[in-house]
Structures are given as C-alpha cells and as structure tokens.
Length: 207
Image 1 (spheres, helix red, strand yellow):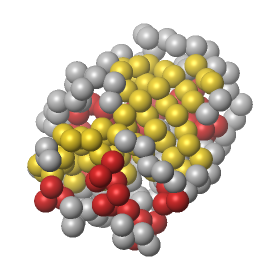
Image 2 (cartoon, rainbow, N blue to C red):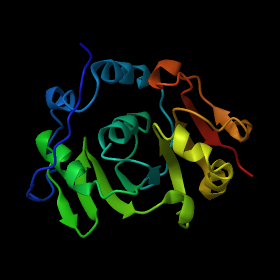
Image 3 (cartoon, rainbow, N blue to C red):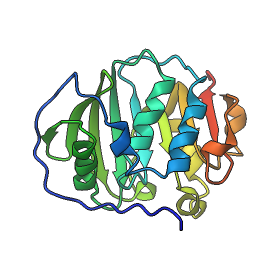
C-alpha cells in the first residue's frame, strides 16, 4: 500500500521566537513522503553564495512549508530570509499547524509569520491570490514545485518571472523553463529531486 499524507489544520498558539528550537526530523516524516525525504540528501553537495536576507518567492505553495525550508541548506551562510508565499487558498493555518507539530514556535501578525529554522530567521508573508493576475514581487530566489500544469496555460509566465528575478538570483524548479534556462548558469543536480525527473537549479547571469 502506498503512503498517504493527511493535513488537518488545528488551532495553534503563537509561542514567540525560540532561536534554540530545532525541527523534529521524525515528525517531519509525517508531512513528506519517505522517498522524497530521502532524496533531499542529494542536495548535500550543492552550496551556493547568497546575500543575507534575500527574498524567496513560492507561488502555488499550498501548505508546503517544509521543502523550501529544507532547500535553504544549499545557502550555508544565510542568517535571515524573507519568504513570499502565494496561493489562491489561504493555507497559513495549515502552515502554522505543521510548524507547531514539528517543534518550531513562531510570532504571528496578520498574514505573516516569523520563526527560526536552524539559526535562520524566517519572515514569511502569505499572499492570497492568482499569481497569473497579480503584480509579481521582485525576488532573489524562485522556488517552484508541482506547478507545471497551472503555468502551462500561461506561456508568458516564465518570462515574466525571469524579469523579476534579480541578477545572480537562483531558480529552483522541478520542471519547465526550457526557453529561458540558457540565461542561467545551471548546476548539476539529480533529476530524482523532481517527480517529473526534470529538476533544475540555476543562477541568473548578469545582464
């Protein structure tokens, strides 16, 4: 029988910042398929420079807080980062539930959270809306998972994203970007990190 993940939102209490709190890896396994969790070890040899306090943009995020946090390991010098999460549904309650379950406390204000993840201070803003109809923010890291079908109906989307990604910004996606990836310095990365076997990580070249 295959694995099944069930996400149930529950009421959580904002317990404030706790710099010393570490995520419980066993409880993380309750929110990530085991094979996908194992495959994250394939990132261990990827280390990229990044300015401190970059902005990471994640459209169609759902309640997926753990994968972008795990990918922060490829930026070993980070001490602070801004997450800009976007979805048509308000999944902030589920994200709070997940963080609370794995032992990460947070501060909460309107549609935003602040918490520590392995000594990195994360400021998360959750924007509700259709990414294809809104003004895109500027950002330093673009993160995308399981967004292939949605963006296939909007052929200009990837070009618009490219224009908003700052020079030397990092693109992390499990599919797509064939037409513009030549404008990136691509890294050797295992295709097993993508369900589609098309995983790409690249650094945008200076214009």
